[in-house]
Length: 524
Image (cartoon, rainbow, N blue to C red; front, side, top):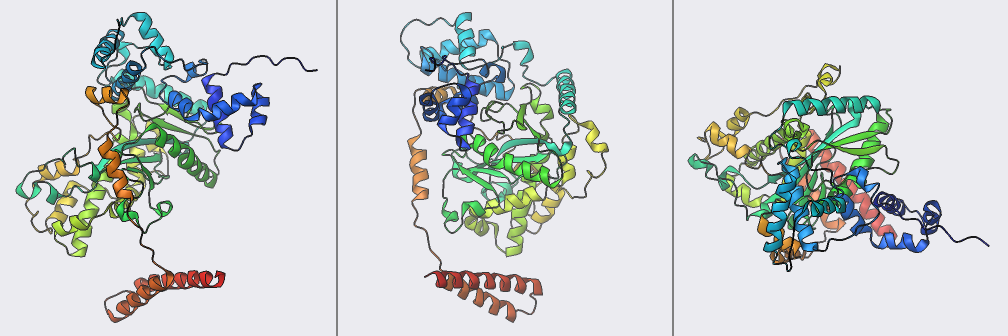
């Protein structure tokens, strides 16, 4: 008869590993044997999956997660939630965070939340708060508000040593970063025609999405843009399958990146696409993703492939703004490409800007922003790494031709746009960069932190999202599509100025529709 099984207490990291294995099809019985635990424990971990992942995602330290064995709640859970939200925002901005400052904010939130009892934000409380959330030591001197060149060089030196130890090539080093985009902010919506340029109203969130660019250090592998919008199925998506969009589309009620979306993107999009690219180059399927300390970026333990070969590494908070590659002109180039593309489309269609703006849909914007990202030259991306990897510019084959759109280029397009011929270069620059300070994640005020800590939600936003989704889909059958294609071909045949490739594309499309129609008829 077998002896009684020895009691095993798993760490948070162990539980994360089990969750990953369960997601990949591992059985409870098999995992129970590997970890020396009961099947009931495995099922409990599966049941509490989101709670465990959320806890680990907001943790600040990988090493502490490998030691911590419980998610013991605070006596003051609302205060804990408020403090963690505030702390993560401060870290993301690179603001100084000290023990006394944490104590002062804790006391403020305690009374603002209307909590009962006496509260003493002592050194002991701060230690327990850090332990509960696996936060590294807090040192005011290392969390400077502005970047420090010495600290930049120190990180860069350590990072170069790291990639040498890991034997990583520039093809295997990636960076991702988010930005907001007011996709419907055209000059006609501002006062640009009068020589001014006003930023969009913050309440017009329906015209804002979050974009995340990701590429490797050579600029040769640009992943599909990740876009976060408000609705799961926006009006303009009625006839479109989100799987076939030119971007990876996610939804969140405020159109913000969040921990859950980032993790989905990493597991389901980043890891597979990176593996495929490295395989095509004959390189080892190993890569690092360099990130800043956004509150929406999960802990390193969460951002790791099953085999541990594709993983994330974080920039120090106080130097991220100085060396984050995507911030060194990459995001700005993409936004400029997008707005220049919209203006050019307006000219090509011969519309006045007001009419063009009214017809512009989110689906139109996604195609245009995908094209804008495609037009960012690889050289622009590789140059953005020069502070971290100065040797990259000396490598052969990485300096690719490509033209970056300048303010002068956009100004030249405006010269042919009715009503906007006299926009000054200064106001044009402001319009091009109107969303340059949008971080891509939600920045909460103290009152908003308090409401969220108390579990209050913005019901109006949720209702608005549902309203967008409850639009009946319009089904188009094969016969109708084929008739429209035939009509379009007849039109093109009558146009003497239409070039042959245009007609060939439509003929190929017609053949595809005919084949689909035949398959449907044969299966009925």
